[in-house]
Amino acid sequence: MSAPDQDAAALLQSLGLKLTRPRMRLVTLILDRTDDQHAMSAGDLYLALGEDAHGISPGTVYRTLGLLESRGVIERRMQPDGRHAYARPASQPLHHMRVADSGEIIRFSDEALEARLAALARASGFRYLKSELLVHVCSEAAQR
Image (cartoon, rainbow, N blue to C red; front, side, top):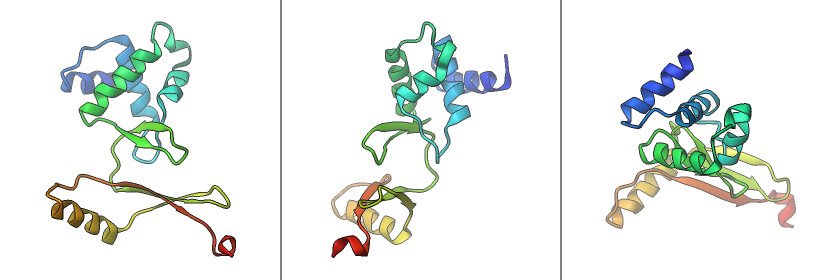
């Protein structure tokens, strides 16, 4: 068993999940190709399986992603284009500005914003977990 396969097996065992070939292959792929900066959609993961996809249905991909998400191994993120993608949990909040006139996506973080969101959650009787914002902006020239 290769080192990436050993990592996948160890992760699945630590989560109490049955070791199946489809799960092993998907977890190996997720560990290899995603991090807190790079996410992949379920369709992208299925296509990336390539020849290894034999015997793995799209439903298996979605079920495995759901299991991994429910156990906190990965998180589902809304991409700026509206699709969902999956990645390992971010070490800091994921916020994006989408520039309407160019389509550019700018990633940012703001500690004051996070503090304000946490205060809003507390004031409403909730515990703040995380935030993921998409802010639509346009250039000053486009406003005129």
